[in-house]
Image 1 (tube, rainbow, N blue to C red):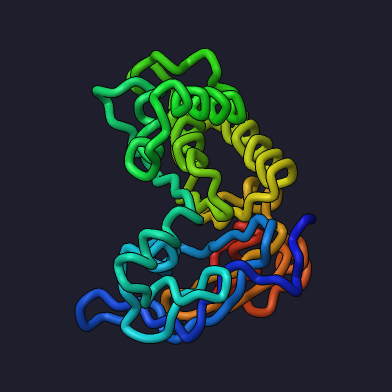
Image 2: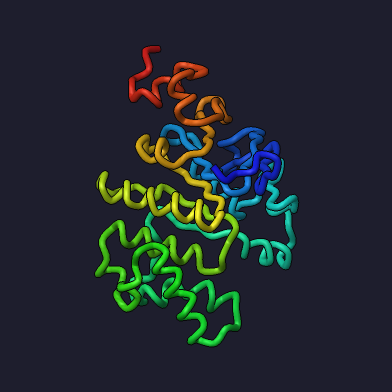
Length: 255
């Protein structure tokens, strides 16, 4: 584990997330350490993807804040928000690639938007990112020509385009078979360990949780908060409550 426990890169403090009058998350607090693979897990409807959207700045919290590198990201003005946005990359669950654009063009989008590099230089960066995820031979293909796992890899390459310190992944294994999912997990581990990237991953896939997580938090829809924090194996072997036990042992709740 490369994470430095004395050097958090993300701090979520007393965060309140709401949809209209409905509170989804109520005053949750946690930190993500630099260089770790941090997983947000929990059952359906507990607020996992909602939390990710607040952490990447899509929504403003009803209370509390999200800090990145000790700066208030969630409350930043437009200029500072755009500056801090370059520190993060995001892969959405579907991959969110543009179907009419080649993989090269899709991965190049952040470079087109945020840099003034000449086209040749941008394409060289794209080639290096595609090589990192094993898609060096797919630059001129369309998304429709790729498998589900390859689309996820292309989306990760796009998230890496600006060399972010933090990459957020929303359900990266969703819809993938176990072999493809395991290969994607291995790629994420290599990127984290070799490049020092901090990954924040939303998932409920147990195999991926055990393979990837340095540390995780578990959300609960009923309490609207965090009901467990720690290493997956520790939570499996010493669950703090019945819900955590049921989740990690794939058992129905008995009460």
